[in-house]
Image 1: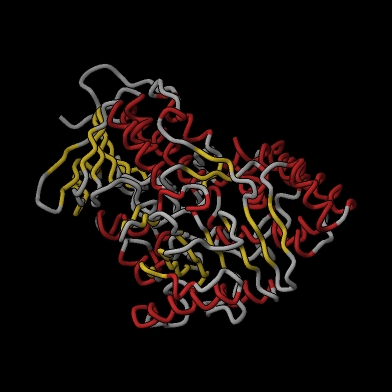
Image 2: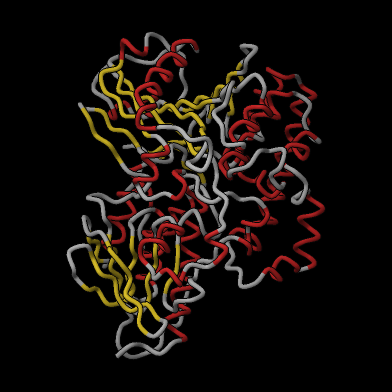
Length: 504
């Protein structure tokens, strides 16, 4: 990224929040020549990609899947460094182990040729041919979307009307629904589920999500899934270290209470202990609706933000086990018998009657995350967000621990309850206390009215000098998208300091 910053005194940017989006923005702004200070409320970087340490176990608190590592590499290149010198990434094979209600198992290999062999063995050679054609189509769709739809700052919905780009997306199925798009290539119901469930990450059923979101499956199951030595949180630590080596001032345990606004422009951050930190532009990395609510004047919040629809949430149960989990891959998915009904339940705001669920065993790739002979388990169950059926989640939390242990034992992972020596349950109520709107870590839903140019803008329309990064602005949810949001936020911030008069 290049930028023209006018001569005179050095511009100063403040970034509130040291999550992936905030760190990515800070690194890019520093590379462009700005003085940058990051104010982070927690004692360690990472935001949602944080860390809990207990009894010798290390639990990643947020995303468990790393994809598109080139986005991390791009940031290190801005500092003249090599990602591999600071973060050890492991390409997972299998990327996932999927188990279905009939007992069959399908491994997602994370490489097109290896996956073709897996599909031929489990589903037959004809389906392997169909999978190869699907993989090619998803790659085409990804390439068609990336520059025009993903890595793009939208200034108007008219940006969607570019005839050539729109025609290509239509031809490739980008405006069909995900499920019928994938089903037009595949016939085996297990493989179809494997390449459509990712719509849940975008807060939608694959029966309603636009085909453009099939690229999540491409990034997830074809481009390759990675783990990091030290867990996903290690990537946060690596980015924070890069930022500091580039000259970013990183201030931890410094919560921001408000953004000071004068004359319609943001001019300073006020910390919880009363310190005033002036700036020329600010990037807000907290969840966008919460940033508007807690940091900016009430009249600054756009109507669109007040009317947002949110993705479902989840319960996460962290398990520290004193023995190894048998027959587990790094990532394990267990699909409900009635795939469509599980989506119908969760999107209607009620608990799934027949749930799909997810188990990550990060010690499969990095044994050092647990004491010798032990394992770490990360069990995730999709749930309604706090706008769904009323649930006393604080009272429910102990029952969720018991549910996780029982489900894992029924699935053949051994005597999990007996092996549990440390645990932590995170519910939608906990997500809300951590600053996530509607109690969901998956942010605003990606239905059509909240996608692309219709998603909350990454500039505050009523307050100059305020830019947003993170899941609830463009381009959306997921580690790659949040890293891109940091890039887009930095571009907006540089435009702000380059085009406006500076405060004296």
